[in-house]
Length: 147
Image 1 (tube, rainbow, N blue to C red):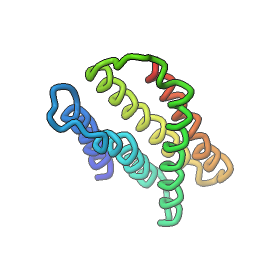
Image 2: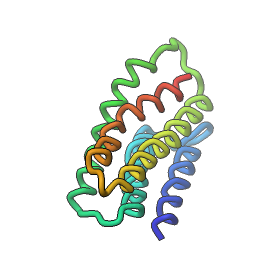
Image 3: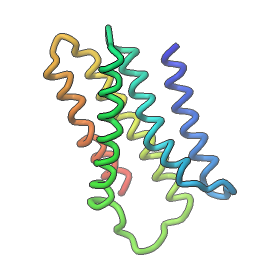
C-alpha cells in the first residue's frame, strides 16, 4: 500500500513539473516549491515508515522537521555555492530539466538515507548519523544539477 502512495506522489511531482513547464499558462513558483520541498519529504517519510519495524509519531515529526530544515539550509548554501553563475536565463526547457533533476535527486537522497536509517533500529548512533548527513547529500544533488 505504501509503495503505491510513494509512487503516486513521485508521479504527481513529475506531472506537476511538466504542467508547470514550457508552454504552460500556469507558470508558478509555488508549484515548483511544493514539488521540490514538500513531496520529497512526504515520500521519504512514507518510505521510512514502510521500512522501519516500529515508529512513533514523535520520531516521524522529528524526521519531517529535520528534512524541511535540511532542504531549506542546503538550498540556500547550494544556491550560493553552485547557482547563479550564468548571467543569462538558460530557458524554460533547461529550467524544467533542472527542476526534474532536483526532484529526482532529492527523493533519491532523502528517501535513500531515511530508508537506510530505518533499518538501523539496533544501532541508534548510525541511524541518526544517516539522518544527520541529509544536508550533505542534498548539497551533492545541487552540485550535480548545477552542471
